[in-house]
Image 1 (tube, rainbow, N blue to C red):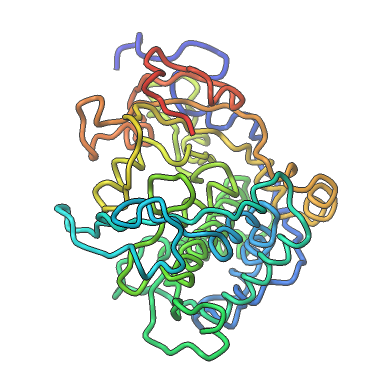
Image 2: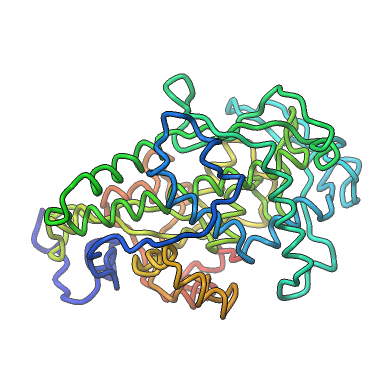
Length: 424
């Protein structure tokens, strides 16, 4: 690699998502500081999980999942799915309120072999009374009651090798609904959430950390366990988002409805978006060693949390092929990823954060801190293909044309062709 390609700046790297940038404001962890003691919600009860899943491994991420699910951040999402209005988006009922998803959302295969929403799409919208700023006690109680009513419909299983499940997936069951279930969810169904590789990754990091003597535990081991705990909790919440859609009737051969004005029908991502403002990942964005002078052996093993704007160009390409794209007003050429400081993610596992900061400041305490981000172009507008997409290139350490921006500037024009960047 010619020396001219190396980054000579001693400050944070402005061109790549690597070393100094990836670890921006991220001092190494000195250990695991999780001390959550809140009760696990029955929807995540340990007895619901497969016998071969270790309760000690599951306990902490399930406590976090409970805290996040019951937070005011998700009250609007839950109430919109379970108590909002349903609007037909096209077809003979376009623009009209409908009383049942059963009237629309028929599946059909598309040219890619996936399901196509076709001309019978609908969307969940909040009731007018729920559009006011702030969360009332009535709204909070309605959301919590909806979670309680969803609990009997859900169980968990280990995916195993017989199911093609990377992280987790909601599977419908043929089991009958009880009279009480039917009264709450007349179009609902029994569901099992199949847990895939996310549990294997969590358990391996758990055992690696706790089976190592204190003297030999490293910050890298603590970081790895922290990440897998958070990602496991997020994966479960993602699937709970789909489960709410299925319970409301978006199953049994019907496509999943859209959420408000979104043009991708993906309720799991919509839940993530409500909670974190985008889709959370924990990939390693460190560059190849010969391409950056900031690279070190330890930083090459470090991963970082990021939030990708939802929805965006990368997801438009992905969900078009899966048949879950409804419409979008104009081409999106750029996506933005935002760094989430490790220290902030670590706070989510502390009682002090939930009992003091969240109790005092409400949803404001759960807003992601101002941080740095980078932008990259959509592969279809660069003449590439999915295999050579910019997202994959970032992860593999190939050079792109990103520009470092502040999170507060995420809605501003940040590229010469920003008129093609359609912010939400």
